[in-house]
Structures are given as structure tokens and as C-alpha cells.
Figure 1 (cartoon, rainbow, N blue to C red):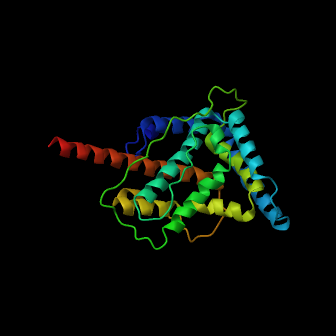
Figure 2 (cartoon, rainbow, N blue to C red):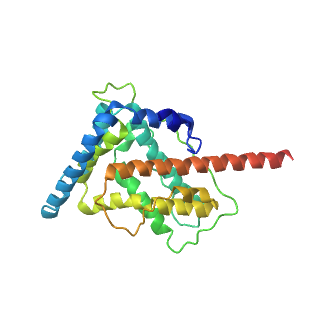
Length: 273
């Protein structure tokens, strides 16, 4: 199965990245701990949500949430999984900035591009979700069309430091880690903040539709999952939704890189003639 997944020619990702993802999926924690962590996460978050309706105050400072998550990633999560998580923040920022550069939206570029594990602190998770809302709100009344010249700048992913040299007590896979990290997230965020964070992933199809329009490329629409932004429901498997969201962003980003390389090759041919 894994040989077929790694060789699947329809996956637009770099082969090294595909191998990194599948290696993470084959960890023992993914097979044995993830099913338990998934149930624990859903039950714990449900209980926290119900209790917060009775005690509607912030149970944990956001700074404590950041510290706990960074500490957990350093001590219990494999470096490859941490690198995939840090990479997602950079990839999503690249997508948001691509839309900003290639539309008439009035908005400053997003600056959230962590390159280290420590960079996931300072409310990076909250900022990461808010960036999606900001760009969508800024697009209000803006007509989306394919620009005469598409700006493919800044689609790079810089070297990432997941602190592989640090001694870890466990090396969990990314999905198990997301399940466990979901609990302090729900404790630290207010009910409305948590709902907003979950709902931000309902805009994945919106993001793909915008990219398809700006690039005039149907490929992006093939990855839409029917996640309507008008469907207000936060009672979902959040870690699973986060993982799918990260994969969709990787697919979209990889296709943008492919388009940029194709455009550069065409420009080189024109200059040669």
C-alpha cells in the first residue's frame, strides 16, 4: 500500500515530502495510539465545551497554551511531524499572500512564516486562523479575475528547524499529536474563539475557488471537498479536519509552484527565440 501511495503520479507534491508524510503515517503511534487519542480528544473537548457554557471564562492564558504546545512538540513528537506542522504555517501564508498580490485587495502581506519550533509560540495558531478571515473580509466587493501577469513570487519554503537533535521521550506522529494538542486549545480559547478556529477550515473550498479564478486553472477545483462556509458546525473531528486542511494547502501550494516553473520555462523559450 505504501509503495503505491509513494508512487501515485496524481499527487502533485514533491516525492521527498510525500515520503516524509507516509513515513509519519507508518509510525507505531499512528497505528496504536491515534485511535485512542482521537476518542479521548473528542470526549475531552465536548466536556470542556459543555462546562464552559456554565463557566464562560478563559481557563488558561494563551501564553500558557503556546508554552505547553511547544514543550509537548519538543518532548513527545517526532522531528519530521514537527517539521510538517511548522511547514503548514509557511505554506498557508504563501497561499494567502499569493491571493493578496494577485488581486486588487487592499491588505498588507501576511508575515507569519515560522522557521523554528519556537516560532509556533506567540499566538501563532490564533494568528494563522485570523489571517484567513482577514483576507476573505478584505476581498468583499473585489472582483476576482485572472491578472494580466500572475505574480508567483515568494512561494519558497525556507529551511525549517524542528530541533531533531533534542532528546525526546516519545516520537508521536502528527495526527496523534494534533488530537492531544486539541485539548489545551479548547481550554485556552473561549467558546467563540474555538468555534472561529474550527470554522476557518470551512473556507478551504473558498480558498481553492479563489485560486482557480485567479490562475484560471480548473485543477484547484478538483480538490474541493464540499465544505460549505455557510455550514456553521463546530461539532466535528477537529484533528482530522486540520490534517485534511494541511494536505489541501500542500496540494494547492505545489500546483502554484508547478505553474510558476511552467511560466518561467515559457518565458525562457520566448527570450531564446
